[in-house]
Amino acid sequence: MNYKYLLFDADDTLFDFPKASSRAFEAMCRTHSIPYTPEVYRLYHEINLELWAAFDRGEAAKEFITLERYVRFLRALGLERDPAACNRDYLAALGEGVYPLPHAEEVCRELKARGHRMYLITNAVASVQRSRLRGSVFAELFEAAFISEEAGAAKPSQAYFDYVRRRLPELTAENALVIGDSLSTDIQGANNAGLPCCWFNPAGNRRQEGLRVDYEIKDLRTLLEIA
Image (cartoon, rainbow, N blue to C red; front, side, top):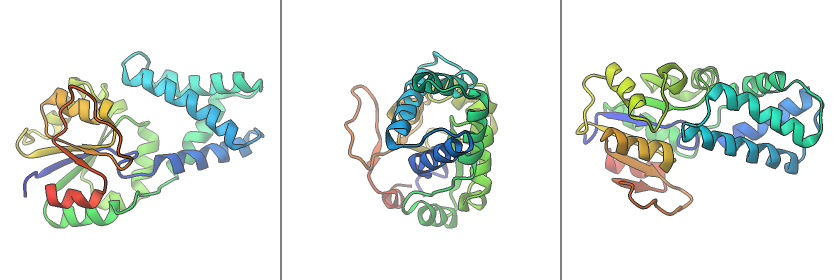
């Protein structure tokens, strides 16, 4: 065993977030009588991505962006709806959307059987992530979820990983591995914290200059050869 502690990102590493998000958004549209088309979802998605990028840069609070995305979306469509109610119903539907990525369950079961201790590290909305975790196969495999909303800091900040380390005092740069799909949050966060990292890159995206990537994988099953 190379790494006893495995710190997994959740969305787009273990969970199929685009699938969960699109289905939750469609359910929200039905509830609030908003015409649903691929173009309408694309508009929301672009607004959402822009705001989450601001969150990753530390420019906006999560409470602001989760509501503001619907303020901007409804304004763009010229619709009079309650953005807070739209956001609430979207998050409720999102919390029920549990779609593991290919091989995620089998890989995590094998890692658990080998004696690894696995944890989620995520910037997602706490209520949503805990609901999804409870409703997934990962509930019995992961020992805890460290969620930025509860930590008072978010990936990629040093403060977030300090929070994780306080709860896992035996974790070191020699026995822990961060696994995630995002260069800006997961891999940058591991760099900031001085931890080894594994970039899950199924799309074959280009690396970012000046960023340390210890391992790069396109298939989660490759993690069994590393960990």
